[in-house]
Structure formats: C-alpha cells, structure tokens
Length: 114
Image (cartoon, rainbow, N blue to C red; front, side, top):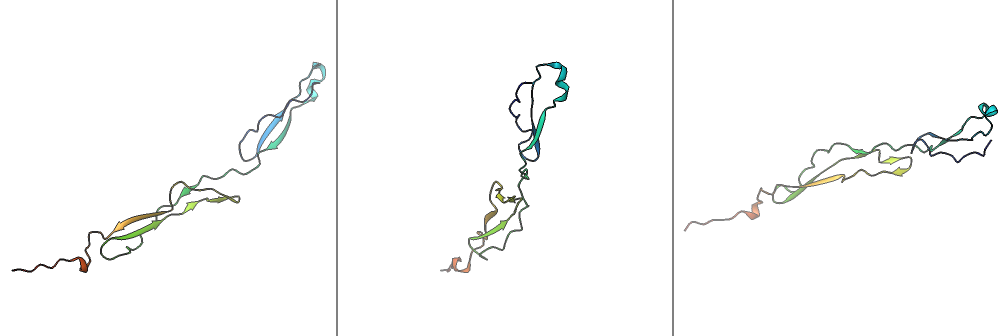
C-alpha cells in the first residue's frame, strides 16, 4: 500500500458534508480490503436567506398643514442566526413628505379691495 493521500475538499460549504481520502494499492491481490476513508466536515449550520417583511402602514403626518413628514417601517426576517447578525439590504424605515399642499392659516394672504 502507498501512503494515504490528502483529504479531499468538503462536499458542502455549510451544513454537514463529507470529505474522503484514498490510498492506492501497489499489489492488486489484497486491495479489496482497503476502502476510502471518510469524515464529516463543515458542520456549521447554513444561514437562512434574509428578507424584509412588507412595509407597515404610514404613520400620521407630523403636521396637519404645511410641510410634514410621515414614516413607515419593516422588519428584517432571520436577522440573527446562530449568534451572527445578518443584515437585510436596504433600510428598515422609509420617510415621505406630507400635507405640503395644505397651507397653514398663518400663510394665508389677506387681500383688500380698494
């Protein structure tokens, strides 16, 4: 028998995989007794894909007239996996202008007829 070859690469990048190594036989009469050796590898769990929930409803406008803002939010699903923080792409809060076309009473113009 020759010496054992190096271990192969793992069959998976995460989860439970397998790697093997071989030994070549020089005398073919007793080769059937040696099988490849195998061992488990990469037993770290695979991370689940992260994704956003849908956007919530818009919050109330910060102003009843003039320029106001409102916001809405969403939640990143599977953000913490096996103690590791996995971020969703994008933002979790969205902002929008509101009531910009509604003039406040102090902005009304007074006209006088002459």
